[in-house]
Length: 559
Image (tube, rainbow, N blue to C red; front, side, top):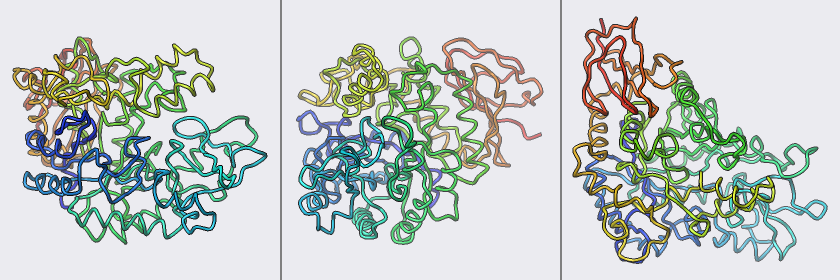
């Protein structure tokens, strides 16, 4: 795909985007009806979260048929129309490819389950138990054992996420050919590429050994299942067999991947992926076991936030890799709530983070609803819909001995349900998302936070997104320029220069809800030109103050 680094990607989680038929669930025709909105933002690609047939234990990431559409979302004809209508507007569709596991309802697994001699048995990891227990001590991503028992054979099968998502054995060349066939199927239908789910998890350690065998209890097997060397062989084969033969955009989800891992996955010339996501920002304030590990009490500082940004920007730049930059997606709480002040300064920090995401080195990814500053919601336990939340509520009590009321507070802090409440299109009934009862509780603030009303305001967040996206597209330095931190020790303000040899810009953003003073003495500021600001255009001074969540972009003189 030519100029792929310049693309702006808008992620749609279809179930909560727009409901066209009044059943309370978003659908493909709903996406079609809202294409003009996405076009108006300036997005070039839509990352469409899974719309395949699925029993929805993990809302589409448990796939029962890779080449059919879940009837809740519509038909294959609807999908084809979406691809066509998006293309008319200059927008390509990226599918969400899930190569690590299938649903336990997938025909491959059903055959494997029904007959120990089935050829599909080797598509998965079936193992005998050890001393009446699971084959090893691996902890799943969602809590509890990573193994599920097969009552018919008395064996166990590997399920690294939910017990309904059965890990595929990528050592089997037939599995790899099946996945490559799926990719070709969708590329032939006109999709422009793939976001590839947990791609760095498809190679497991030979023999599936225990993690820390001398320690008691379940252990998370990170180095035994993530970023292992064979995964690069598999992706290079995928590139030879599929990606090299199409004009194809790729981004990998590299869960717990470090900077060196991402460089290996994305450095040009290795023939693997175009870009990957990093998770370190979203793990700020979390314990080593992830977002429901509350032992750090979710406390983090702006210097810590900046350190993560700077480290990733600088190391990936030095190593020749490429990042997909994002602040919200379907797996994370809303970033206005996670990193900002979503009450007093919601509008200001929405714009500040927009400016940050769209001026960093890497390809920007936006998530539905962030363009009007959507926030985390308010949930009771009965409102949860996500398997991860429901299961980890139990795990926090059983493994970490947390009282039920505290476990509920931890889940409500970080649940994926925050990102999955319906998009607020207007202030009408059900936020204009559906004419009936939504599948999940609406965020009650939709009457004040919605796209239609925001567009009527002089300080519109939606219009600011449009402006910054257009600004990025018209200034190549923001795509190709070198990233250099400025004042990296400042406790409130992140500032950096983007320089491509022709153009030189300084970005300055206050990441707090307090006024911030910053000193640029020693820099040539007299000839700087203000180009863009969250609070209007104000000159660059050697010593100046920024309002809470104020951000500015300046062009610096090269003399």
